[in-house]
Each structure stands twice: as C-alpha cells, then as structure tokens.
Image (tube, rainbow, N blue to C red; front, side):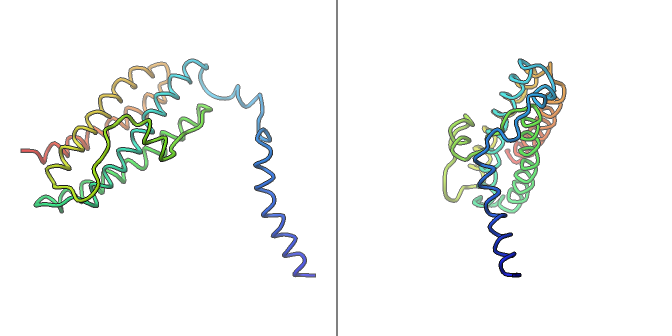
Length: 185
C-alpha cells in the first residue's frame, strides 16, 4: 500500500507541471492587468528601456567575467580583483532590471542568443587578453552603456521608479568606468 501511494504521489507531482504548461491562460485575469502600474504608453517606453538595458548588462557582465578569467600581464592581480567585483555587481542589477520589467507586466528576455543579437555592443575576443587590451575593450563598452543609460534615464521621466533604477545602474557603470580608466596612464 505504501509503495502504491508513493508511486501515485510521484506520478501526480510529475504530471502537474506538464498539465500547467498546457494551460497558458490558467492564471490570466483581466483584473490583474489593470493592477499593473502606469498607463500603457509609459509602460511601453519603460519596458523597452529596461529590455535594452537588460541585454546590455548581461552582455557586459559576460565580457567582464571573460576578462576576469583571461587577463594577463603586470596588472593581472589588480584587474582580476576589480573585474570580479564589477561582474558580481552587475548580476544584482540584471535581476532588478528584469524584475522591474515584470512588475510593469512585460516579460524579461535574457536568453543568450537574444542577448548576443540585441545588446548592440561589439563582440569580444576569445583567449588570453593582455591587461592593456582588457582596459581598452572594457572602456569602450562601459562608455557605450553609460551613454545609452543617460538617454534612457531621460526617456523614462514619466516613470520615476524605472528612472530611479536606471540611475542606480548608471551610477554603478560610471563607478566601474572610473575604476577602469584609473589604470590607464
């Protein structure tokens, strides 16, 4: 009897997630849509700014992490530590940006192929990277993201919560940019 209950319970646990996938509107509620903050036009602008930022932050995190692993040269230790702090810090913002997008009722897209296609940042070389090369590569990418964030901050002025989040992200990107520039002679 005990084995039969275990088998039945296991079967039920395995079947429930599959059954839920077959019910795409099982949790849809028209009243829930009206509970999403802000009007549709403002949400659309904010959602687009958040998604573009999400793509860039994920790409920048991976580039920074790649550099952290593969930097070589006299500045190895200092850069290794700095880049470790930078990519770790980006991870928290990635989650906050995605969750703000969800709070506005839009899905967050962080799929690797979508990030590669939509981040609009130059590709990144593979293999070992000299310390001065890492500085140049990351400097241009962090500057690009910083400039784009400034534009998005202006675009989201009708959504102070999203704007505040983007300001926090920009503050961190600019601090990291300052740290990267400090290594250049």
